[in-house]
Length: 490
Image (cartoon, rainbow, N blue to C red; front, side):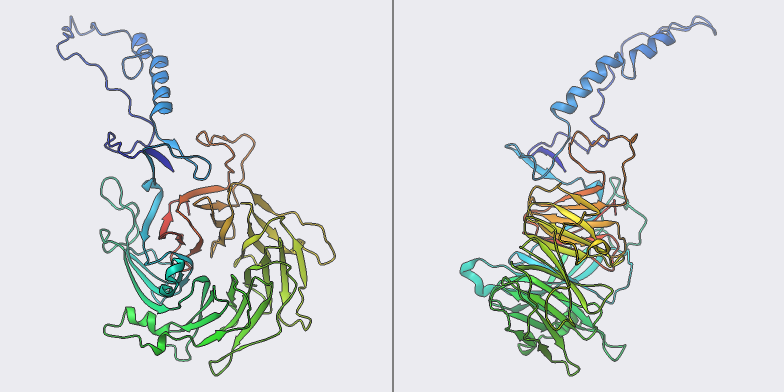
């Protein structure tokens, strides 16, 4: 990020390579003289031109002045969470580093959201872009009854424009000047949403859309399952009205006695299989029946001595899942276990393990984020139930100085990870980057920047992020507002 004075409008255009050089001092009335003949003139010698430099001054003098200008008034690299803004300063993004950047506001902030797959195509690069999401609100305590589940359509998401008014890349485009539009359907909840996840079950008739379900873990300890298929259809069906009956949950899970944050649908059970975990350290599994109903197994999975902060199904094994807890452990489970105890337990942190992401491309890779700001990547093949020693991570980073609030692998690249933290930043990382011994370690004067760090995006109070599975490189994050962006680095 760059920092500048809030009212400073003295620069007509951004400077990409440092400050502009001083204009050459040319005396228009100076008599340059006349040519004496074809082989002689009165210009300075070649040696004098070289010594004078490009602007008529000695190089040493000019470089010293430019260096002073960079220190005193030039753009500086500002690290959010590590530096404080001075009075009269504000942060502004470098728009040349984004392919797309938009902010959208909801009636209340949302702690959690999920992106819903759509029928608009895979790997699409057409702008303005459209996407569908679902989120739960966090209203002020006195207005808890205003809380709702929001089914949303983001449209008119245009890409960035080049400085010359031309498109910044060669991707297809219909209209680059549209403003982003947020449409939403509201489902009353009367309680704060701690975590929400969506799942789609394919329809038996290929011509019909899939059934889209959401599971909402609420502050009241109940887990609400809604069918939001009609809500999504109403965005693109003129005159369609969502009835009050369609706003009611199709299932309410009351097994939990305390609130929680762990929620995940299995990607390998098309009909729907749901895990939910609470602050008592208990995990329940709920299965959708052939008739469309839901059955919750009342025998919980026990093992954590702290709250269950995150649950993730294995992307490759239908009966395996992992959980992360405030007890500093990650535990791996098999739903077929009659004892309902973990098959594997690893103590990976002395702090709360807040979030976790299982790599979809390489299923033995697991990323975790903890309360001390450290995030790490683990090779599950190196974990053993016979060892109580903490395993060594494949990679770990202490760049963030506040708790990690969200982490997610890129959907198609097993070396790219997105991380959100309590220091108001979203960072993008490339684990494939290695710094050779002879390679320059210049980081624009900023210390302690790992070479794997690709990008830093500022977002106030960021809580959760997700990659869009159908728009390559597009990220959505929630905080005080929703931020939709795509960088030039991914």
